[in-house]
Length: 115
Image (cartoon, rainbow, N blue to C red; front, side):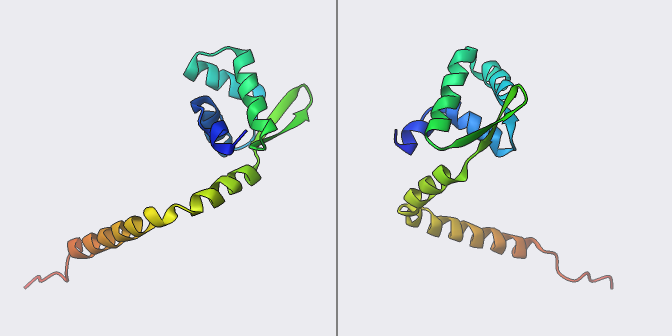
């Protein structure tokens, strides 16, 4: 499965967003996703499997629990692919940064004249 096929699903993107905050148990992920998307536990498990099978997450046993974490390799591959397109938005972001800095300089009050 191509990385963007995996990331094209909003449930899987949300799982990765949750995992970006740190390692979480399958139970905690399932509870959060069920609350947000109103899907069944087996459906959440299937999404976790897709993420795991495609290298976006790692899983490790911790007693009875399964702990999930982001696996950065697949995300690096996506980042490298996106690198081909950064030229389309990077100059605009640089220009925005320049304008923001210019605006801050213009708003800065000068020395106070108390005379």
